[in-house]
Length: 452
Image 1 (tube, rainbow, N blue to C red):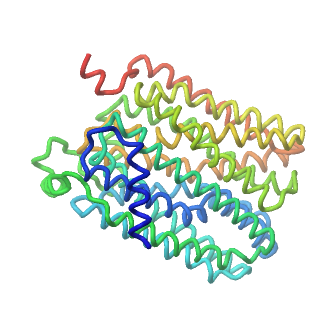
Image 2 (tube, helix red, strand yellow):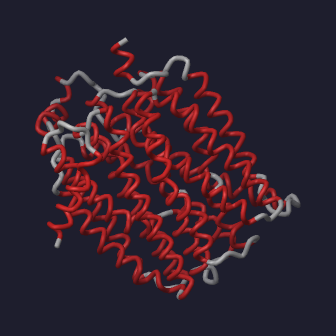
Image 3 (spheres, rainbow, N blue to C red):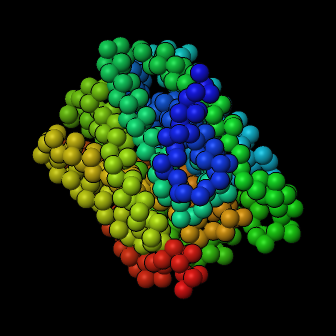
């Protein structure tokens, strides 16, 4: 059964690939496409919207409300904050077989998701739920860190946006479907998470099998270079020492400025998700399926429609120039949500979810590929490690910052606490302005700059 499915994806993949590519190139692409069609079914169980709403509704009566809101902030921020471990994953994977290492992390994620079946709707069950989600996200952070190294070896730069876009598109469609169905099931039975999570994990195991069949081009040379890094042209060996981040940023000031701007706009984007989980439940009184649709399903469903547009732009310009355009999508969304919360206009929240999806389409490409415009192939993992580690820092702090501002506004007499979205928009404007200024130096992709 698995082999026919792989063959189907192989034939479907051919239309996305440039002509003249080798059979090995096509086989890798098909196997990875199949993996990203299955792994998101389990990954949907770790999405911030699903986790946040499940925690709020399924365990709400078992935990102190203030503590619950605080934990929801941490859980919703986990997709980003778990990336704090990325430098450790980069160091541990250095000199080791990349595919085997990634598959091992996928299996850990699968086991963590399956463990949710043991989380009864009690206070102790909520603790187990939170720990399982955290372990799954930490392991997945290693997958995200290392897969870009595999992409850099297997796919040329000019094709990466289109290929990564295809992976992201099928991942988005699967995530949108599984999160929506999860919302429907939880509306029927709040305890359904106890069998939905392990079911999704079992499907993810098939995706991990498909991923295990990928071959990395030039893998032997890569491992030899990593194991004998003193002879490599790049001296930045990955390390679990946080000073490694400062060393890389100090050596590449342009990348450091790019990371600062991204930190500003990223903080604004991450800080508003946890307050929205609370607002949708407390102010708008939405059920599971509506809340999950706004938080997760709709934005992810829109992504495949915007990815082709963003991928064409990213293929032509430097990631800094790309971000100087792309960032304004999230600023517009945050301002719209503020107005919708202020006037309790629910249709506008759905419109904002669509706008968010447009922004996610470009964000998933730039987030996964953008560091390649600064890094050499040998230093790709180190740059990605810095990138996702900084994402982890804002992922840890931003949700708590957002919940703090939300609660502070309520304590000061605000009817909704929606002013948190104004703060997010302001941070976004600062970051976008920085990208605009930086784009005067970085406008073309490195390949075109070298040709010039």
